[in-house]
Image (cartoon, rainbow over all chains, first blue to last red):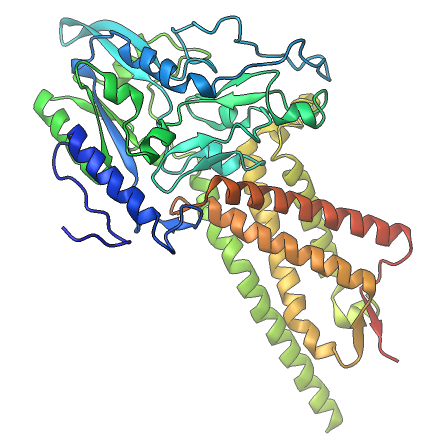
Amino acid sequence: MHETADKIPLCKGAISRRCFLQTAGMGAAVLALPGASSTAATTSSQTEELATVLDLSQCIGCAACVEACREVNAHKYPEPKKPFPAMFPERVKVEDWSDRRFTDNRLTPYNWLYIQTVSGEYQGKPFELHIPRRCLHCQNPPCANLCPWGSALRQSNGIVRINEDICLGGGKCRDVCPWHIPQRQTGVGLYLKLMPRFAGNGVMYKCDRCYDLLAQGGLPACIEVCPMQIQSIGPRSEMLAKAHALAEDMNGFVYGEQENGGTNTFYVSPVPFDLLDQAAEKGPGRPHLAPVQDSMAKAGNLTWAVFAAPLAGIAAGLLTGARALSREDNADE
Amino acid sequence: MNKKSSVVLRWQIRIYQLSILVLIVSGLGQMPLFKRYAVSDIPGMAWTADFYVQHVLHYLGASVFLFLVLQWAAFFPRFKRSYSLTLWGWLRVSAVVLIIGSGFFRVLKNLPSWSFSPEATMVIGWSHLAAAMLFGLLALTAKLSGNATYLIPKK
């Protein structure tokens, strides 16, 4: 294997913890090289996104991942100041989870991962599946693309996260997310220092794939702690191949590959996802499992227009100028 | 602009103004304000709270705006000998350059193949908003103070 700034050597096949740590460590070393700063923009050709595969047939619903997530990310949880500022207009509701921190049957600002248990019947046999639900880390995330304040962002390694230092809690990320994943806590964040009554409403929270642990060469807490090792993490192409192989083995189905134009989370299930979606309890903080069209497709198609317009304008301007010059020359003659 | 009919066509100015209106509305619509302040509750205005519609509108408005501004920028050297930009013209043109520059990175950031650090993402978002506000402030002040003219004939 050759180590270059452009190509980080990656483990082949199934990703063991040791192999993953090696890769992550080398990745960190490459990023530390001059000219390979993490603050610089990078293209996908330089570093492949990280993705995860979850083998739902193996999940026993022990919720060890939920506990680990809470423990590792506790220092990131909001500590709101009360009383909250009165909101204007009054129809703007505060969202306070600080007295319900231990709610674990849905997503909250204090619970970025929960187990969605789904039961039913498939091919004449009863089933019960446990699905760890969290942000899927879309490849082209509407939450990050449409955040007007620059607080939601997508890292070059595919992690989509929210910068809690500047988030105003407007909740646009939740509105545009096809699964409505981010959750708001009122009474924290930058909005308190600006116009707390009139704009903003706290900070939005969601899974950040333990980006800080990954940067140090560690694993996301949910993966590290899982007793059944249902989850793997690695380069997207390899994880996708693994997801397909798993699906083929169990004659199963993959969710997350095509959804919203592609995500970096692949659920593999022996039961079709439309059936799981029908049977799942859905609602606020409890995301669905339905097919999702690419939310950013229209805007993506328009990007060419935004880039082509100035070039067309320059061409039109030069042409108009040349014509005017030609007319003047003719008049002089 | 003086001699609008010969330097810049009047219908182009109208389209330019319309594109700015679309950019202001869709720019404000990027923030969750229309729903909060019940604008989207007004019959026929529900689209103002649809962030995807606002995003597409902003891109369309930006395309028209960029076409016209760059056309005039390419066209201007032709008249440089006989016209000069006023001080208020320079100020507003500078703000437009800032808007376009920050907007370019904003569009780039939205492409799935590009990623920026949290700090850069913040700077891109905030600078685009600040540049738009600066342009609005300058345009309003220029209008109110009777300095709306961009070009004056050289003596």
